[in-house]
Amino acid sequence: MSADAGTIRLATAQGRWLLAAMILGSGMSFLDGSIVGLALPSMRSDLEAGAAGVQWIVNGYTLMLAALILVGGSLGDRLGRRRVFVAGVVLFAAASVLCAAAPTLEVLVASRGLQGVGAALLTPGSLAIISASFAPEDRGSAIGLWSGLAGVTTAIGPLVGGWLVDTTGWRGIFWINVPLAVAVVWLAVRHVPETTGEDDPIDYVGAALTALGLAALTYGLVDGSWLWGAVGAVLMVVFVLHQRVTPHALVPMQLFADRVFTAANICTFAIYGALAASSFLLVQQLQYVSGFSPLVAGMASVPMTIIMLLFSSRAGALGTRIGPRLPLTIGPLVAAAGLLLMLRIGDDASFVTDVLPASIVFGIGLTVLVAPLTTAVLAAAPMQQTGIASGINNAVSRTASLLAVAAIPPIAGITGRDFADPAVFGPGFRTGTLICVGMLVLAAACAVTLIHRLPAPAPGPGPASGAEWTD
Image (cartoon, rainbow, N blue to C red):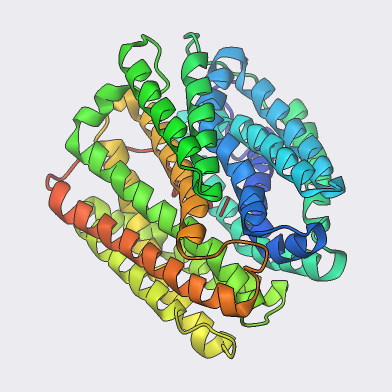
């Protein structure tokens, strides 16, 4: 443990540079999540990919991130948070170079998987480093700045990504990670102290079961293979059974004995699954059917991000006063109304009259629900387990994104190599969006029926902190 740990002040040069390194590092993964979706049509055309191939470009990354994010946090605690964070940044950058140079779809998907491994190492480390390095009196302000400025990276990501795709092609969105990574590593080595946490054994068996189970389940959903889907489901059941008996579980199952914790994670799964799938469908609908450029398509997510940046703290304060049940009931329903408005987006869509109103309503719904959702998760856990509770909730949100993007497009009829034909994609977009509406309604029903008591708020961020929701 460094002598600087827990003593750095935000007003000092070291404090500012440390925070800049964490914001840039986590911002790399946030930017990647929001940019890649815009480039999918260009990737599909250049690499001659079908619908399944396009899904794997997204899922290759999300699969490894969802499977290893808890392991990444544990490795940081055991081996040193700065060391693991820097390793994650370097791996993320190296994988980005492989993505940019990928000659085939298969190489691109494999490289995206390596990116996901890098993100799983750096993402939990950024917040852990801030919490362990800053003095207690500055810790809250530092986390707030990290959350807000990370949100700004998400807001500008679609604009930067759309411009890069329009001007340099899809490979440019990966090359931009290289100079960012160089800056992050330099700042981390010079200004970030090394810190460690508990030296508990890491549950590698649980990690392997998660990775293999999610991979098989995702493959089964994307390719319509019942056999692989069944294998994945069996492996996930074995994972749960393993977590119940191992003394050093990645997911302490006793947390789920609390009804509010369980209900909040069910809501998280439904909400973040709907968010990921609707975002995946929308950016392609805007390009394939409506004929917008990547830059204009990217602007569709900017209003909702701005609304969240401006009003999330107020929504969180309101949720603290009145409890999470009402926001978690109303928020998903408002977001569902925004998705219903998106059904108006067709071949003659206007950005101002069709896209913008839907984005604003959807953003209002997300703003109402995200902070109370985090509060419910953390308040339902014992104080000494808020860190692992936040990590579990992050893993649930990532897993939901992975499975939703894998399952909903083929269910909606978006399959084969002709899926980009507006006559195919348009009806599939409407069906898939309605499925996402149903998931949000399910989340609202879960909140109103299962979240009855008012948990006391506990500090700390979950998946809704900053921009953790575009990758």
